[in-house]
Length: 427
Image (cartoon, rainbow, N blue to C red; front, top):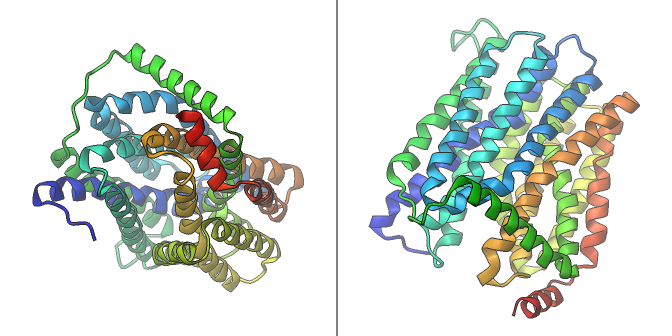
């Protein structure tokens, strides 16, 4: 276990607490209550497949906007004195939009979708700068531990508030609410307060590494040039490019299931309490399951373990298309929890084996860029298929194409050969 100096403890835990803070938005808003409330309240009296399409488009559009400005965000993040300033600019956007959702009335789906879109931009944008602050609180020896600490705090923080929000929903009279709608709106406000409160340690106790400040125009230019140069290198490394395309495809499937699962359950007519409890299962089972998957990869093989996760996801989709009983949603939630964190963490470690350490920041920048881009096509595909087929089951089945194509491309990746090719090309 890595020992942390007393002088650095405060900044490390203050940094990790931001993951605890903003994961409340990811669990309560993005994955949990907003999809449920959007279909039942904001988009009331609208056909289930149409509301699925509306939600899918809102998710895709917010991700697309982040993709467009990602190179600029990365460039600004490289100017150390601006990281925290922009982190909190985006964080406050997300915090404000979380609270604003509580003011949207029944049937006002356009306003709800717009506020949700802005909230997603705030959430994803702040995470870009949050990652950029990591080198300021860690070094080469403890960076993996510190990064993992943030990941763990995110699971726990998001899960704890979400559990409280579920209690508020299921026993709304105990908390003094007149109905479930009032309880959910209060939950959106609680996310804003939680996010704002637990962001304060990072704001107050984390000091950035000072670097030379640059003009905004220069930052924009350097950001896009950096992306262009990295892409030029990757294009010449066919094995690495093959993995990145494979990753982009199957992680798109993962992100789509995360964002659209509750909406799908609502479309099938399942009770909202069951859907929310299922999300709690994912949150609390997911963390130990991720660690277990990492152990399995150590004893077996990382690539084979990723294939196992993809296979489980395909089984989940097949089962989902045939699902009839509400208890089946619990079982699917457990299966998703077993593989969701594992496929994400193992993909990152598998990629890290193929790139030289001295170029890690450059290549992981492109990797993260693809991760953001992956959240566009899946929800959009679900939206289009739902409208064309008028069937939520067909729409969710369409997600399988991402896993199948991703698995086929991953099969042809030889990480050892790729690592040699990358090292040779960059030497």
